[in-house]
Length: 464
Image (cartoon, rainbow, N blue to C red):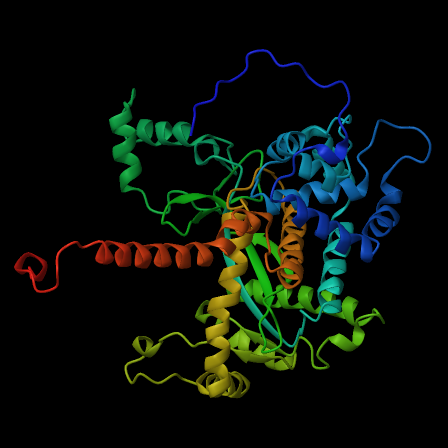
């Protein structure tokens, strides 16, 4: 291959048709996704929902609701965490411009306009858009709704540990340590002195005593990798039954210091409300399981007597593994005196978990729930949030999870759930043909080399 040279001066064409512009592998994905959105009249829906939040006659140049939600969907499909990154990426990509509805001669909205529109549209409208996506899933036969799988993960907050202050005195952490040093007799403490004092303390960063001055909703928590950060707790309710495909039915954001047993029922209730909205739609009501939201599958962190009683009272069948509590009593048996309802709920849950169906559901839990976390927060780029305030973050998470659900629709239609899946698809399709060609050429070359031997068969050199 001959080496080319980069032209320092290029004469630009005077006219260029839009159809002649170069297309990326992501273009057919976004074109098909726009067809899905148009088939369910997405723009008409969000414009009707968001009309009360816009000025009736005059106002600053606005961002259309359909464009706003598409820009946030780009954040999921392209794995972009910040709104500034979304604006930059859409400004550089012709495919994303076409998906959002921008012309070649139009400037893409900057990050401040996206942020202003997010604050303008309330949380309930974002929930309604998320519910609309569930209706699209039901229309394509990708939603069952009978069995809910619930699990949670931590998201790093947009706040630094070094900025936390005392709730009572508003002292920073270094100021608080310096006061402790002076009380112990050290008038001018050094860094080594402060570190020595801090090392001996217990409950150094308790959420009861400390908070971030600009993001009180962020709580001190230990992350998955063992580090300590200010974080939020994101909880998913996933469609986990035999007829489900792992769709996210509800997204809830809680404080990172809240226990799993205390957040389980609110998340189940939110998923039930979303499924009720789907069932109330006549277009897809017959595509949801009649016994929807009747079962829940979680891990052992959600197990407690009170949680099992609450689920039994709500007539929800639980499949929750029971942690080992044999070390809590000398006999290894639990004390059920005065707790007949708790005993019945715990034993019924234990029988279901040990059954064949319970084992199958546990296997699906590890597959589908972890998959939703991986897509939304790892490849989706939301493991660290760039927003502050629980309501702001929840808005972004709802659209992010909606993008994950739309990815299930795209996987059914074109075989790929993200535009990155189309990269190199043509080469992967040609790979088997290339492998056959390599084998044939190798065989032909070996045959040709064998036939070119000019020595007779009985010659000693030929035999060697």
